[in-house]
Amino acid sequence: MLTVRRIYLYAVSAVSLVAVTWAVISLIRLILDGGVGQGQITGLAWALAVIIVGLPIFLFHWLLAQRLAAGSVEERQSPVRHAFFYVIMAAAATPFFSNIYRLLDNLLLTLLDGVRLGYYPYNMTTADHLAALVVWGVVWVFVWRFVQTEKSETPAQIINRGIRRIYLLAFSLAGLVMVAWGAFGLLQTIMEMLVGYAWRTPVANYTAQLLVGTAIWIGHWLALQRSFWHGHPDEERSVLRKVYLYVAVFVFSVVALSGGTLLLKRLIELALGASPSSEPLLSQLSTVVPMVIIGGVMWSYHWSVVREDAAQAPDSPRQASVRRIYAYLVATVGLVVTLTGIGGLLTVLVDILTDPPVIGLAAFRESLASFLAMTVVGTPVWWLPWRARQQRAFLSPGEGGPQDIGSAE
Image 1 (tube, one colour):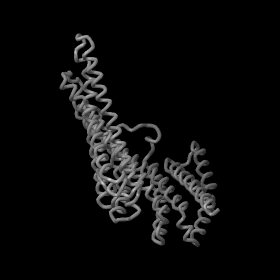
Image 2: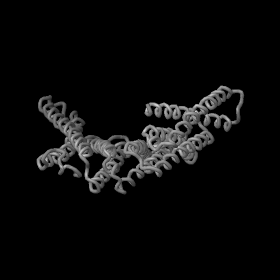
Image 3: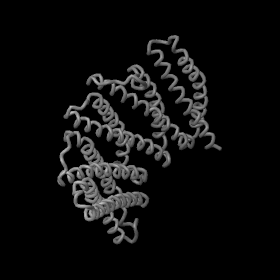
Image 4: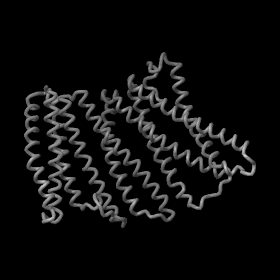
């Protein structure tokens, strides 16, 4: 019954707080955008109605929850309470960073004389963005102070530390995606800019995305890294951390290898006598080169973190299972690519031998280059992790035995 009561109190508090916050932001924006006029009556009525109804609901449930927490350590350490804190912090941080991105993007568009779109949310004013930043910033700090105060009073339970880890990893992942996409777009635009393509608007957009994404990623990822560097047992044994790292390693390795395969395919076509494209070289490479660079850099970084983790803290059995799944998944992908390449090469060879000679080798050039590139790239991707797992399987009493823990293939 206590858990049901907590869920009710904190769920109603969360919904009402988010609703009231957006209503306050809407009201401020109405006032800042030239005052409350005849055409804004509907918006004003909606904002005031939500505040008048929602604020008492929030205060009643939140103050009741606070009174219960003040008299009980168990209540303060409740996972439901901590989940409420981090859900609200996430709900506040998301529009906070989004409005920072829009402000920075607008500034760069102005400096670079780029094109600004005329519809929502691109047509919002600086005052609109600042209103959201201030209000959501106040909400985030309000909740964060409770988290810090209660963390200093009593040690957090394992499940509460897990909730914190989910919050940090979720924003680390979001920031990482923004960094990768922003860096990719910026590199692509710079390469195309050198051959005369329009660049002002995309440079502004991708630069803003890269800068904001870097702040989000580094800020949240370093919080997790500090816990690991300080030898916190929960962070060292975290399976979720390993899943995050291996997913990042896998995804960025696929990006880098895909770009490398496309680049190798084009080089093989040229080596087989294909005529150069009329498109400028930098434009031709504006997709594959950023894929190789961004994928390679991110792959190398996250793989180095995996190796450092293994050196500092040997993997637990569950963490070793994540490593094993990753190795077999990579080997499977590599094997599929390799077999596809070999099968395609055999098919092309049969076609060359059986089709009339008048067709010539030029008709098979693209297929031959594609399958040969897949074979060259896919073979090491399959063989290296497969050989490592095979060696460990024969040297260990069983996959996942003591010798398997902490290895870094």
